[in-house]
Amino acid sequence: MNLPIVTLENQTNNVLLELAQDVTFPLSTEMNAMIDQMRKKLEELQAAGLAAPQVGYPYKIIVYQVLEIAKDFRLDWYAALPPTVLINPSFEPIIDAGFTDDWESCLSVETQMGKIRRYTSIRFQGFDIDGNKVEGQANGYHARILQHEIDHLKGCLIPHLFRDDLPFGSIEEMKKMRQEEIEKRKGAS
Ligand SMILES: [Zn+2]
Image (tube, rainbow, N blue to C red; front, side, top):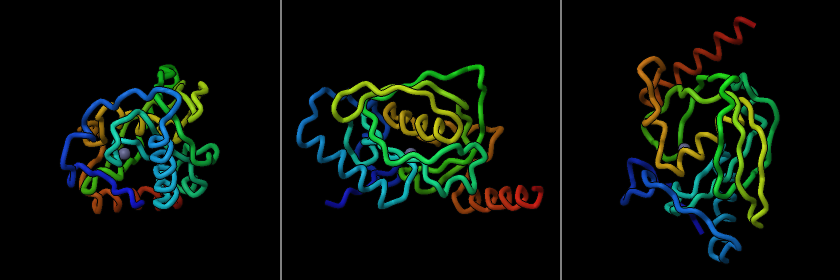
């Protein structure tokens, strides 16, 4: 089954912009199959995360991973994490840890990317596919991925979070800016 990604540019309904629905346990066979497909898609695309609305499925389900390769360009990369499913996820910021601004793009936004301000550390919770409660603390890039994916379940995408005091714009232009930033950092170290 090929799972097409819904984007702001190609959407035929408002699934990306609506509040996703709570999931009840035990999961239906259909939902288990969908989660399997989402996990496969995440690995196929080597993406950081995928939220169910991005495949047109309006439920509170996210899959995500912290890729090893990301440590080359994320200053706040701490550890790799294998593909992980989190159902009905939520988070609370650890306010004292402050904010971090860093680049984000999104599979559902084909034309824009930019820097997004996120909480540096969060406490998150949710459920695994068997309905067991999962909770923990995430820091840095890991926390960023979780906030991005959980935002998808509230209909919030990166263009909603672009700010005048941080760069955003066309993917081409922003990739260039990001590359320059990485080169500069390498030169400085
Ligand atoms: Zn996204």
